[in-house]
Length: 508
Image 1 (tube, rainbow, N blue to C red):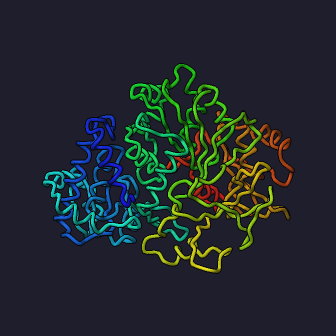
Image 2: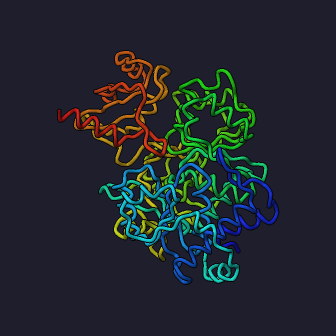
Image 3: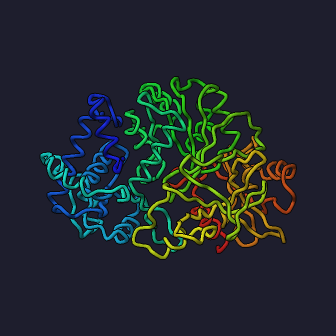
């Protein structure tokens, strides 16, 4: 029985010691080198924090390199769980995260000295360079391992909180083991996989890259962020590293389509193209499929709280731009169902909140029992014994084939002109328009505000085109043109910023 993700790493290192496991544009590490560094760092933490100090949060300052990955696995070797903290975040948010964690230990690099002075962190700062100088102590590692169980936390990733305080989603080893196992079975990953990592390490999409890599004894390249703005350089990088598998945010694929990135050159090795995070526009999907007719395309769905993904849909037919892609069916060890209040929804077309149960569920929100109790609650369909489910806050429906369709966020269902409207339905129609690159709807006051990205403004043309698809009461009442829609750090359209800009302008 497997109880710890380190078993993936050590099995791979024993079989393929010289194979590259993780690499960036400056550093390549073999399985043997990476495992040795992680063990050294873990032993350094054990020595610094003393044996017996386990199952505690260790914050790790991250950038887009392999260095944070060494720290992540070193923290796990020490018997604790890692918390990625992006150096580029506002320091006030970093302080909120560290306060929520009550983090006694933070791993940084020597280059972070000035940053740490400004942060005024009062815990113990461990510099990675110094930890890596420690000798591996096999007996200390053995003692830590003997005490570990599969429900121990592996990592915490912070998401935004409605009160302004970030929420730390705490995920156990067993949930990530289940994720990696399900991905291997569903998508036939093996040691020939070469993953191209796009997502930041404090975004849960990266979890799929990292742990699918070590599960399958594969290789992962951390793609430099800058090349995503220059398709030619990105394609050159993908070809140079022979990357054949990408699990990217929808926005990353949309950028390529917006810029018509495959006009002069196409990635030569891509076999698996997987996406999540936002609703995928069929227009963008069809652009990619035209260039990769033999590749496996997969629409993935799931929030951070259920360990990345709970459903998937392998694209198996052509879709018109007016259609909506299914989010598919659950992974083999996950149960996904719809509830209208506490009533089970089963009829095609009927709306309900997407709920999930199974090993995939996170442990909850770290140091936040109230929010945990709200989202991770007793299954109302079962009164016989304790059974936790996660209420996603997403609204879905089944199509006639039994596939699950994402409709919108629960808080995106509005009442406008006496009608109940799903903003997601308007956005689906918007993103099918050839004249637009992307668009989102924000409900502010009495207005449905369409924020759209296009080469040039075209309010009349957009409304005329939408009028052929939507009833009059669903048409946006205001349109705001953007040369480029703002994106958040996770590569999604920044709806919070857009709402703030709209409300700020309304006040003025």
